[in-house]
Length: 146
Ligand SMILES: *[C@@H]1O[C@H](CO)[C@@H](O)[C@H](O)[C@H]1NC(C)=O
Ligand SMILES: *[C@@H]1O[C@H](CO)[C@@H](O)[C@H](O)[C@H]1NC(C)=O
Ligand SMILES: *[C@@H]1O[C@H](CO)[C@@H](O)[C@H](O)[C@H]1NC(C)=O
Ligand SMILES: *[C@@H]1O[C@H](CO)[C@@H](O)[C@H](O)[C@H]1NC(C)=O
Image (cartoon, rainbow, N blue to C red; front, top):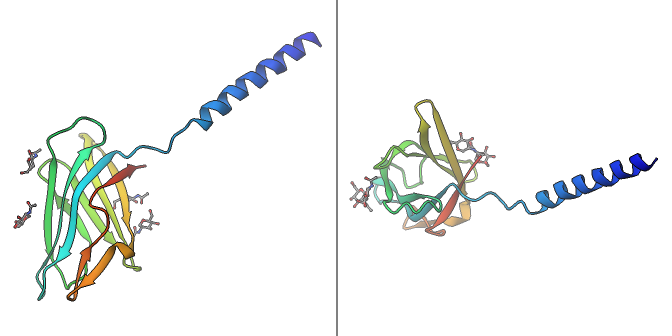
């Protein structure tokens, strides 16, 4: 009986500690920070551009990776497959039916593995100006890995 009491006290303490640890869990930090993000289309069937800088979050990385890719568009910000940056990072844009964009940056971590970090650009952060879509949301945002 005595032993049983100590054991349950111990169990209570352990589960209390586990509970405390769970409570202090912060939302995951972004893996990358994007800055100076611009996305726009030039008029008259011209190209659409995605231009931005991407930094590894809180790494003190001070040399930006710059990404600047254009594709021919029809005035709507298009999907991009394997957009190029001036490092081994690449980016992708997938246009959803509701006009939102799934934006992601991929980095090779080992010769056979990659990490992909994502951000959704809601449709209401894209405006049509003079018949061309232009991104009007925040120019800086975090990318989250899964
Ligand atoms: C990418 O280009 C930017 C702007 O030209 C430059 O500051 C940066 O050093 C370049 N980054 C790499 C990894 O070459
Ligand atoms: C992106 O590339 C285009 C075409 O190569 C160039 O005109 C533009 O200046 C570049 N933008 C930046 C921010 O480097
Ligand atoms: C875009 O991202 C959302 C949220 O992660 C996901 O539910 C949706 O399936 C994605 N769209 C495409 C076309 O992959
Ligand atoms: C992140 O983006 C990649 C590349 O577009 C996609 O394969 C993956 O499903 C996305 N993950 C989430 C959670 O949206």
